View 1 (tube, helix red, strand yellow):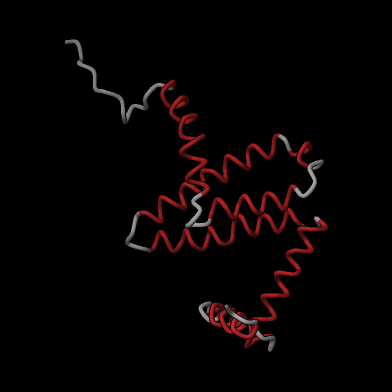
View 2: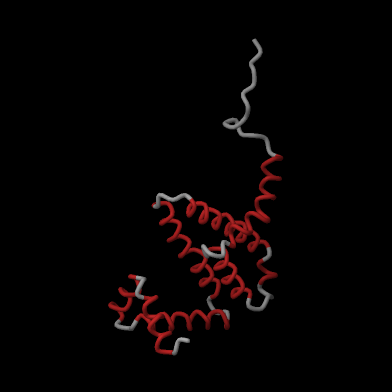
Length: 163
């Protein structure tokens, strides 16, 4: 069983993995452990009081996926490309859906907190929420739409010309 000092040491060791936090610590002279706790507390205030949550949701929904998408593009693996492409497809559909029912969403308490949780679930590589939504919902819709439309000239079967 870990005591508080061991938890703190594990927390500090986990933060040491991120060079950006070391740079932040050097520039602000605030220990990275306290900076992360402060940012987390500020984030929780946004969630609880709803102030600026649209902005926070956009930060959560764009910044980490953008960063990891660029890493995926630059990597040799293809599984990470698929993960982030799936996330962006789900995010696009979710955003379109959100635009049309925005006035209703305003009345849902803690909507932005749920949205942040949803986005984190979608983007987290272990949870693979975007993949779940794509496989169980979006893929069927796409197949129905794509199957109903005529093939593009590039993918259409060549027809025999009459002489």
